[in-house]
Length: 189
Image (tube, rainbow, N blue to C red):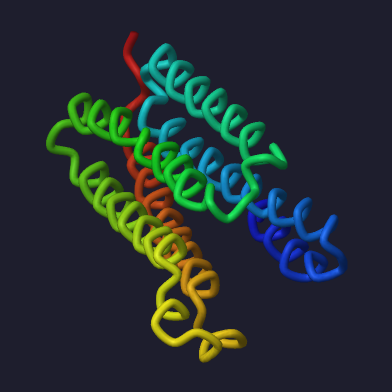
């Protein structure tokens, strides 16, 4: 929700002035980073509830990475259009850092159908986010017909559609992993 609030504010207020424009688009990027970091918490919490050291390591790592990315993105010098690919790469790197805990969860819960289904949903989420970032960076379709997509259908709007679809896939994964934890026996230490 924090991501969508930041995005809504950015889209609503960024047209006020050049100064506001720069500030609010950076806030939009920070909101996206916040969403990526937050999306790690529930699956890692539930998948590693019987492995507190791993859980702490993964949640601490993504939190620190997220803070570094947010600080970097709030830097006015990195807001220029020429850094668009760099910003997209930061988001993708942060998102794909989830591969390590995903593989770890797969190993420790080998053969559990809930974990496999949850990871499939997370893979769909990653693909949707990557597709959205690809449209955003490539500036498709407005690159092909300048001026034709100024109101509806430009890459930024397509990016947001993919983000919402990815968030829905992530929600489904979280529900599956929560169901897994409810049905699992208590931890044995």
